[in-house]
Length: 309
Length: 309
Image (cartoon, rainbow over all chains, first blue to last red; front, top):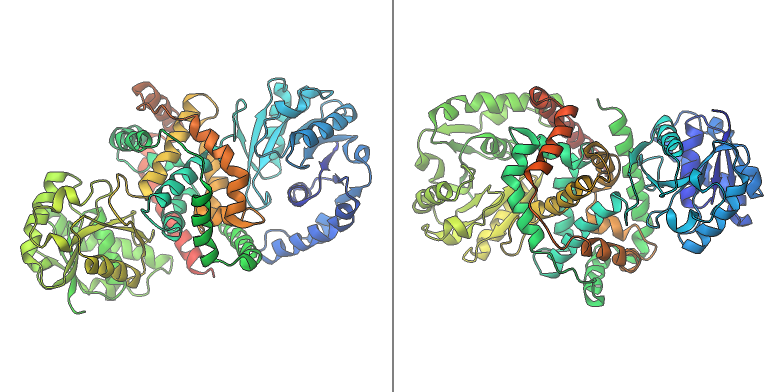
């Protein structure tokens, strides 16, 4: 199918998506309503590509940059595109407005994916022209290092739009996950959310420090999960596979769940205590440097995983 | 502090612990009640050391093997040991019996850690002689590749036994986590348990396949978690750190938790459906080969992590 990729909203998320598509050989046209963002965009992407090059995660930054064009109006980015990735501010009104603006510009067969991490597509695409072409394609930042994409239809999304989005994401090297219908938090943030709730509850009751709870994951649970999901992990962890595992461990996990049936909001005091431990471990002024460390680790991990069978 | 390391129970878990300690330069004396396990023990450990050598995770398998001695009676393994790692069958009566047998053999200052993954130490050490020297040191398999160890006191465990176990584990290259008092599932299995419950519930309600839920972790959530814990992850994921993150995402996670306040056991039908998807993805006959793949991936990941800052 001919046509370029349109990127609407060119902040951190839009820049990440631009790299995903341009790295895969797609022509990409980018639009953001803010002139300052448009003016800086190529420099931001160039910097990220240089970092990727250092980890051998891209071959030729200049060739990738040559496939990217920044546009000063929405129509130039959207018209003629076969897929548009929308990454504007995470607010319903803002998403509604941009969806309404994109809808009438769509060519036949075009698909619009929203990067929203929490708002179901139905909350902002219902009134859009061609609303059956809209869906959610939720990435993790940065998408060129963390390949999962949650693909979620609104009730009116056409099946061929879903199929097209899944195929496109796989084609550009992402790992699309089909979420069959809308649910709050989709899958990734629901899984993260329940683990965080238990982690916070254990800390609140004084069982362990935030640092030790972190270590339980970073030096334990998280190792397998960086290359196998939770179902495969338990399938391999009992002689007779997952059914055997469910027999053995199901009652323990049920009991744990039964101990958590009265969820309370995280109190201000609890947040202060967590924040206090974290700020003693890492001063606010050092957050930026640590984020750079995290991104280098993600790059090194991506390079490592690419070399495995 | 002088004294060797005693290993009691020399199956898969005991063999893993033996490698941890002998790799770190400790003299290790191993006992298992089953003659067949004792007779095969050095061959099993030798094979694992050869695998580790291939990934440059040990230098000199022969030197490590030379520090290991298999004993044909419990006293020979325990007497004179400064630390004993107990890894017998995961049944209360069996753990009670071995604890009762070990207690009278302990020298002054010796510590006994149990590998139990689910039984609190108080359930099997209450009646043992020197019960204040007993605690839980819960590993993940294999401990020479997955360094986390949950160190958990019974109500009668002496503080210096806890301190000694924490220091020993750190000294031999593990990552000890202090769990301040007993709780069902400790920390690691509680975190795994809540994530699994949500994964199973999403599958049960038809939101996604087991394969796609797995991908959400293995190509998404699990990447950061293989080198940072959940607290650090969210601390770096909002401009103002974890307090800022809690303000933004806390309400979503609270809402997710509120949707899961009536936990049911996994039904036989649900287990059949999960098992069905897994067995179509991986035949029962292929489980063993896939476990070997997992272990190679864990070794490669350990080598990768060792090379990072």
